[in-house]
Image 1 (cartoon, rainbow, N blue to C red):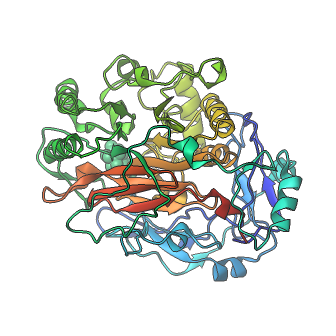
Image 2: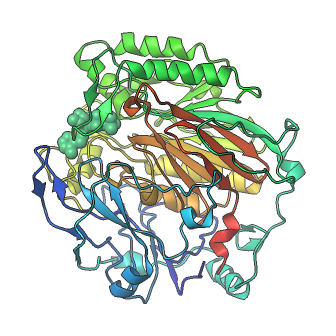
Image 3: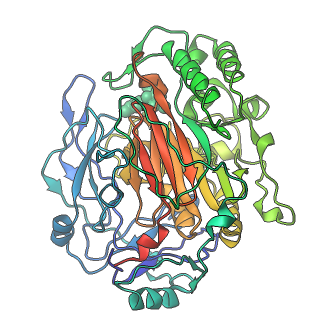
Length: 546
Ligand SMILES: Nc1ncnc2c1ncn2[C@@H]1O[C@H](COP(=O)(O)OP(=O)(O)O)[C@@H](O)[C@H]1O
C-alpha cells in the first residue's frame, strides 16, 4: 500500500483523543444511484461520484458538522488526484442497496481486503451481493464538498513522526505494531495463549472445500458463535420492503435451534455466542405478540450451553421501548468485564454497551448503534427531539424510512448512531486494550464500513466510529448484522468488517450462522449455509506497507 501524500484528520466536536492516526491512501464510500420503486419503475438518475472523491482534495464529509450533530471525527484522505485518476485507479464495484437503489462504491486504490487476503477455502469471496441491481454506468459528478475549518485541522499527535517513520520504512515489511508513533515490541505469541487448547484444527463443512493447512506456528485459542437477524414471528412467509427477498418468519426459529444444536455439540465448545440483533420481527408488535415471541426465542436460547451476548437492532425497538429492553433478558450487560482501577472503561447507563473478555488478551466490545435514534425513546424526551432533528437535518423525505434522494442514504429512521459519550468510552476501552496488547472484536447491529455494507444500512455516524477504531491498533474485526445479504471487507487499517447474513432471509434448506475460530495469528470464520468462510489475519502492519 502506498503511503498517501498527505493525510488530514478532520476534527469536529469529537472529543476522544486518538492515540495515533494511521495513514491511508484512499477510502471509498458508498454513492447513490437510481432508485427502483416497488412497481419496477426507475426514479432518479445515474450514480453520483462518491462524495469527496470528485475534487482534487479527497474528502469525507465529517458527520457532526452542525451544532446538533454528534461526533465529527471524520477523516479526509488522498490529495492531488483528479476524479479521472481516481476513477481510473479505483476499482469500481457495484453493490446492491436494500432500498432498491443501486450504488457504486469506490474501492480504495490500495489492494482491497478481498485481493490481499487469499480466500481460505480457495474461492475469492466478495461483498458483492446476489440479486444486486446494476447501477447506471453514467457517473454524475457532484461539486466537491467544503471541508471548512475541518480541512485545516491540525494532524493528530505524533502524526509527523509516524509519517516520517512510514516513509523511511517504504518497501520494508513492518512486523512491529506502532504505539503512539513509536515502534513497539511485537506481541509475543505466548502472551496471547494463556491456556489455549493445544489443537490447530478447523471443522470443514461438507459443501465447502477445506481451508488448507493451518500454519504450524498458528495456535488455536478459542472460538465463538455468531448469528444475526433471526426476526422470528409466528407468521406466514413474507417479503422485504422491496418485495424481492423472501422472509421465513416461522422457520427462523428452527434455524436458531439448528445453530444452537451445532454449537452445543462442537468438539471444542465456543466460549460464547454473539447475537447481532433483530431477534424478533417488528410485525410482532402489530399482532401484540412481542412478549410471547421474545419468550419463545429466549427459551430456545436457553438450550445453549454457553453465554449469549444480545445486541439490539431496530426490530427490538419496534417491539419494545429502551426502558423495557434495559430490564429484559435481552440486556446481557451483567456479563461485562470490569477493569479494576480503570473507571474510564466503565460504560455509562445512557447507552447499552459493554465489554467482556472471553479469553485472556481478547476483549469483545458490544456497541449500541441506536444510542442516537428516534426508535424506542419517549417522543416527549429531549433525546428524541435531538435525534429527530439530526435525522430530519439529513433526510427531508416525509417518509423518514426512505433514503430516496439522499446523498447520505444511511440517514433513515431504521438506522441510528453512536453518541459522543459512547464514542469517548469506546476510545477509552481501545486505549486500554492497546496498552495491554489485547486483540479486540467489536459487535454492533449496524455496520460501519461502506465497502462491506449496503450504504443504506450504515450507522448514521459510521465515520466517527471508524475514526475512533482507526486510531487504535487493537481492533481485529467488526461484526454487524442488519443487511441480511451479508458482506465483507478488510479496511485499509487491517480491520475486518463482517456483515453476517440474516437468518430471516435464509431458506429452510440452508443455514445462516458461523463459528469463529481464534488463533494466535488470525481468526477464521467458519460459515454455515449461506455464511461464507473467512480468514481474518492480524495484519495491521499492512496498512503501513507501500
Ligand atoms: N425504502 C424504504 N422506504 C420506506 N420505508 C422503508 C424502506 N425500506 C424499509 N422501510 C421500512 O422500514 C422498516 C424497516 O425495514 P425492514 O426491511 O423491515 O428492516 P430490517 O432490514 O431491519 O428487517 C419497515 O417498516 C419498512 O417498511
